[in-house]
Length: 194
Image (cartoon, rainbow, N blue to C red; front, side):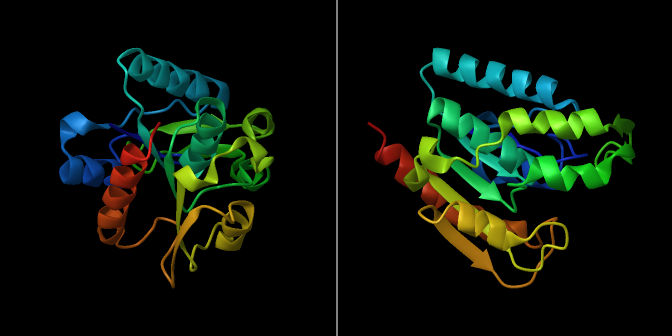
C-alpha cells in the first residue's frame, strides 16, 4: 500500500496522487486530502497509519513538499519507509513565507495560513535524523526547485537513496519519469522488511 501525502495548498486529488493511482492501481494508493492546520493534518495521517497497521499493512509513504516533511515525522514515529519528493525539510521556516490567505492549487478553495500554523510545524520537525532508518528512505529532488534548496534535503539525509535530477521546478516536472524508481524502491523495502 502507498500512502501519498500531498504538499501545502494541495489535495489528495492532485496530479501526483492521480498519477500514483494510475501507475500502482487505485486500490493500492491512498490519497487523503489533509486539512491545512498542521495538528489536524498530522492527526488524520496518524489515524490512517494506525488503521493500516491494524490490518497488518506497512505503507510506503510518498510525500511531496510539506507532505515530505510530514512523512519524515511519520517515518521517525513508526519506522515506515518513504519516498520524499522535493521535501520541505525546513517547513517551520519556509512556510512562514505563506502567512496570509492562500488558494488550494487543486480545489481552488481559499484558506488562512497563520504565523501560529507555521510555528506549530516545529512540533513535527525531525532534523534529529538519529531516529530515522535512512536506508528505508528515498529522496527525489530537482535542482531547479524555485521554493526550496534541494541541498538541504540531501545534507539532512546523506544515507538515504538519492535521485537528484538537474533542472525542474518545485512542482516536480515530469513526475511520471520517477514512477519506475518509486516502484523499484517500494519492492526493495518490502522484501527487506523484517
